[in-house]
Length: 338
Image (cartoon, rainbow, N blue to C red):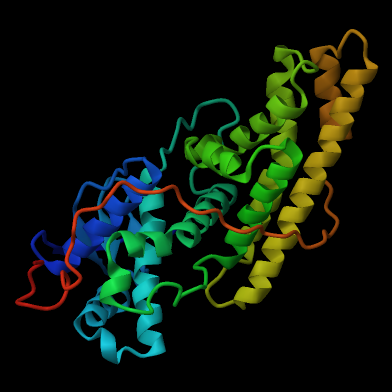
């Protein structure tokens, strides 16, 4: 993650600040989760589109995000296809960064916590944020009546900021839905509401709760959890060296599907072996024997995998009725929000 440099502050009372605030608050209402944004907004000086600073502020690229959105409000009837795409992109980016501000980091010293900003952390964090942006962007545009102010803007941007990570995470979520039998939305909710550094453990816990309940002694939990989360961590982390804005998005999407398919296949192989061992052992495995078995018998495979279907993103839950913002709210008029 690049170091973020705060540029000039964008002050309350400006229409840019008001627009960002409305998007963030709409996301909070839709998801039912507060964000840690401290309501301080700055221009970016590092070349990123936007960034959720861990200490609370948000930075946004004025030239690439804010200015095109404001131009779209000023002259929606003359917008080109590219202008509509830029307006929609602006919302997607703020939704993405709000997801980061909604995520609790967690305790780095907790058992089996992953390292902050490690490849497996970034792949899962950025991938989940893109899954959310894909699911919510159009709904948020409706909530703030942007679809009325800028006709044709909903759905104008359908790309991904992290196509490899998004496809990888999407495939893992769909795979866990199949393995556990839980609704995909329940899988997603359980993962995204878990502190970042424990999210892989949360995935393993879903598998344990649905497939090993009544078979696995509680004392075996740490070893089994680590064994089931290992292929997920390994494969999503492997995408990190490929994800780049300079690579073909379709190729990255294909890699994400391939890596997630392999992750789920290796998880299922490990799970099937563990299930079989428990069912064949009338008294259950001793912890020491289990640890030896897991260390030597269920390591993740490294062969290529078939592409996995990413699954359709589910709709966000209905939001509470938003304030009656006027469609001309963000049109120019002295620079202040009306």
